[in-house]
Image (cartoon, rainbow, N blue to C red; front, side, top):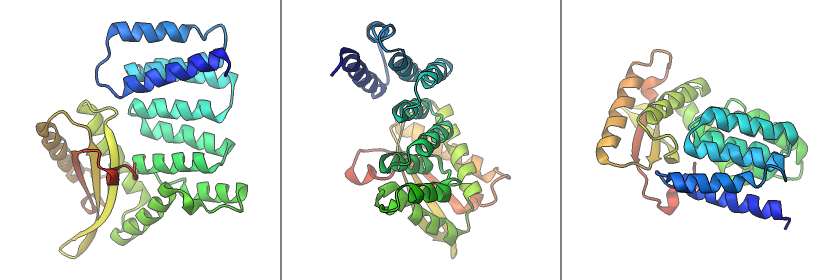
Length: 262
């Protein structure tokens, strides 16, 4: 493997490790920054991409976007779009991440990118491009079944749940935007580990139960978040199905069944 690729992979692993921790030491950040600088004169495209990833970990959205955009001016390879999207998701910008992944999918409509796009749709609650995405995949891969993607199959199941409760795509997206914004403002920028959708009913009125698994620091935080969501949804006049979408935020314990949704 060329030296610059070895360096890039090593730094990427370090950035992903940083992202898994809540606190970062200044010494550690400076050390990784120095290692990234080794790429600047060797592979500018990799350099800007990794700088974008680095800034996403430290929470600087403007610098992260600026560096990723510079990398895209030098290369249109799918990996640069995918890592851009992962940085945006890490920054709590799920809807923006989905748009970048859709660009990656339009450029390379593979099974791998389809899974990433469908996963992002679940995470954001934005299914508006789902049918178009499946059509694009079918044209590019006539011999492959998109249902082999676990996230695609999950969305098909979710569509049935939404139809049963008469919840529109628009209401799902608006409510997910509202809930995730509240979670972000409570200080949990990149703490959602899984999202599960299920069917329910109250007084014979069907609804969709949305369970969000969150890495939290205390039970009090969960209580505050759930209280805030209930209040926000009750006052959301722009969401027609506000009473047919029931959100519950709970602690994520990392059990196997929680890994395969979002």
